[in-house]
Image (cartoon, rainbow, N blue to C red; front, side, top):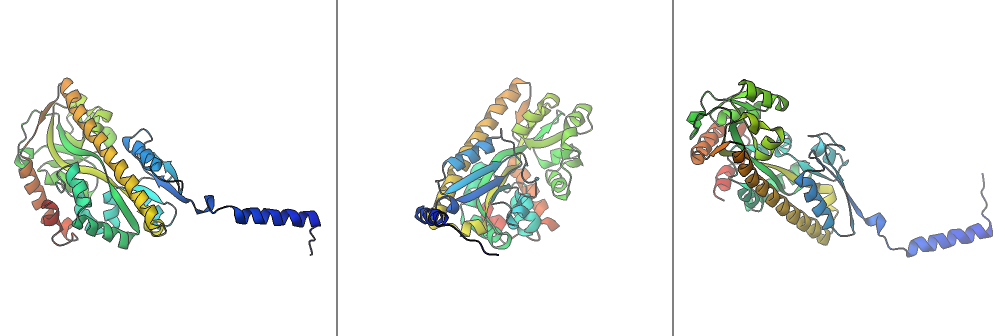
Length: 328
């Protein structure tokens, strides 16, 4: 079958072709960054990502999807690896599921606080772990996104100073081996219970306590059925802001610098917001009648790290990494 174009059609086609050739490659060269996270659009970290997007140049198009509306929680890493997602907020536990050596970064008392967390990821040992994730999982870690430090909240009046004081305390922990081991590493009797059942469990005495960052305690109103918070600070809560290594490798050096700078500034802002919120909540909880007590954190740390080092969980940890992190 033969198609013939008239003179007018040929002229129109020629003009259109010349116009397309004259237009700079802008939109078609724009780097699209689709981002998925489980946290809601009202979360501080959603605003963090807004600030990240605002710091990017016109060379990028950022699309944020929150509340696990694009990919379910825990599936973001695989989505990135399959090329279905460019960026994500990935839990270190999800990374360790594929990369067992990374489980060291999920252990109790590894990081002292948000500043220690930041210091590690900017250090030589931190670069070593990030390179491992990049080489073996195909993700570039832009930085850790802090969201609070886990503390022990109790309904009982028992004074807690050392792990030995936690003996017999029925401490609710999430289900799963790693979480139950964390409860044991605190010296407690870990009790698995669904998150939605914790309030009732505290109210009825089915459990003696729970562990969560203070913002979670406020959101779930656990403070209404607790008498005290023991500031064990046993686990610094954080996720990882990551970008696909394939996408990263396709960026120019200038674009990489722009993305990293935007991430650094946004993460710093988010961390400050979370720390401020935690301080404000202490005053709020005290006004509600809750008491706060700081135990012998060094004793808790030594007890927990000994537990981890003598367990199967530590067999995949990089040799010497724990000492390097403790020395920072």
